[in-house]
Image (tube, rainbow, N blue to C red; front, side, top):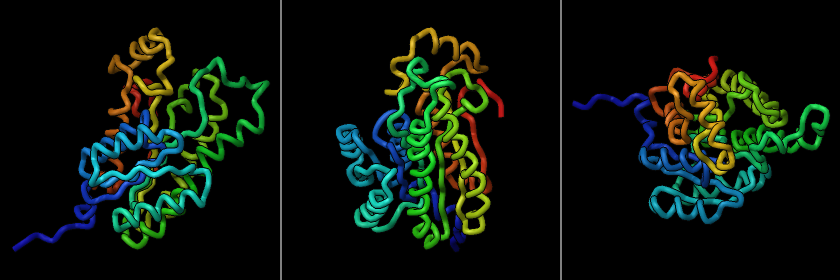
Length: 263
């Protein structure tokens, strides 16, 4: 006699279709690869990194699909889900909002308080708040049909440790954290969880490649683990929120930075 499976067991990582926005390079590529290594089918979204997206997809030809879309455009977002349904036979029910549009992690190049403009704030709001909302809205019909959904937003530890003047970036990521918690309350009754994973400086991505070695060393010395978090380590935490092990967790922000900041 076989033991009936629970809903959580029916949505193991290997059974999921996952959309990773900005999934072709840096942290996004690490997240895409982690899901692919776990047996999931992955829609690798990209905007300009076509070569990287295709190269990653070719390593997993039966389970990866690279699709170009600017997630700030709702019509292109809908096209992502149409492409997944056509290729995989179903829409994604796990979404990782990772895309970060046109932002340079260079404190010297970012506007200080006196110079911060409405245009800068609006540009980051479009990429870090409105785009994830549009992706989530496009995912909801498929999640509701499945009675299951996992939404994982990528945040930052700079709320707790504002050591660089990324005012527009941190303001919009704070807004995304607020939506993470309110969406979790709104969608939990439908079997959909919404969580955030927040890192700090990662060693090393395209965005952090120009960071001086002494900065990495200083951050490592300040952490209990005496190391700088890697994209792969942060990707592990993302997988946790998609795994059945996290089925009782929603509305949470998990900081993955080697213990640099607390809570």
